[in-house]
Image (cartoon, rainbow, N blue to C red; front, side):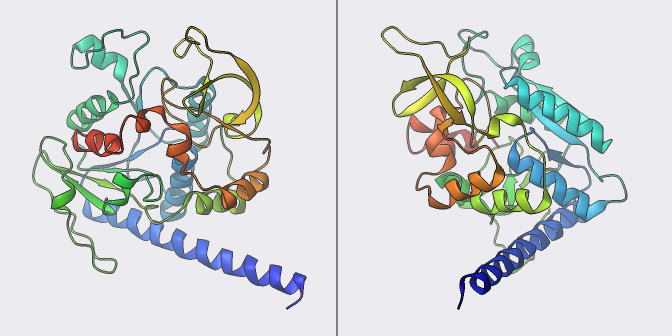
Length: 311
C-alpha cells in the first residue's frame, strides 16, 4: 500500500471512529432529555465541555437546548477560561447558571483554613450539591472520560448518586448494550457522561474535525513556572514559589484546565491542534497524572472526592 493510499485509509478509519463516538454521545444526550425531568449540562470552558456543547448542538439544534448550562466556579479559575466561557455562552444564546464556591464559603457550608489561598477544588463538590438541590436537577451531564483516571474508569455512563449526592462504586447499575436505567427517587440524581468512551486523542481529533475554538492556554505559550515534584506549577498569587524554589520561564500548554491551585501545564511547543494531536498520540502519562496536583496525594484521592459528591 503506497503512502497516499495508506493515509487515506487511516483518515477514513479515524472519521468512522469519530462518527461512531459522536453518534453514541448524541444518543446518550437525547436519552437524558427524554428520560430525565430536569437535567443540566455542565460547562466549564474546558476542551471536554466544548466537545459536549458541539454534541448538544448536533442533538438539538435548531431548537434551544432542553437544559441550562451549569458551571461550578471556584473563584480561582484561569481568567482566559472564564472569558472564553462567557463568550461561548453568549454566542450560543443559552442560559448559564453559575454555582459559586465563594458563596458557599460566605454561607459557611464550605470552610477553609485560608479562603484566599487554599485550594477550592475539592470544595466544588459542596457547591455542586447545593446547586443541584437549589434547582432540583435530576441529572447533570458532564464531559468526564474513563481514560482520565482510575476512579473515573469505574463510572457507568449513567452514574447514580444517592440522596446525599454520594457515589458508591459497588452500587452501579448494569448497562447492557445502549439501555440505561434513569430511574431516581426525589433527592437522588444521575451524573451522565456521554463521552465516557472517548480518549484524550479522540477529543483532540474531534476538535480538529469540527474546528472548535478553545481557550488560548491549551496552546503553547511562555509562562513562569516552578518545577515541583515532577510538575510545572504556574507562578500565581495562589501558587507562589516556596523558599529555595527557582522560577523559570518555560514554553508550556495546559492539557486540562481547572482550579489554579491544583492545575499545572506541561512543557510543549505545540501551537496548533495538529501539533497537539501528534504530542498526544505518543504520550504515556494521563492528562490528570501529568497536570493535577490534587491527584498526586494518593492513588485513591479522586475516588474519595467522587464518593463525597465531586464530579
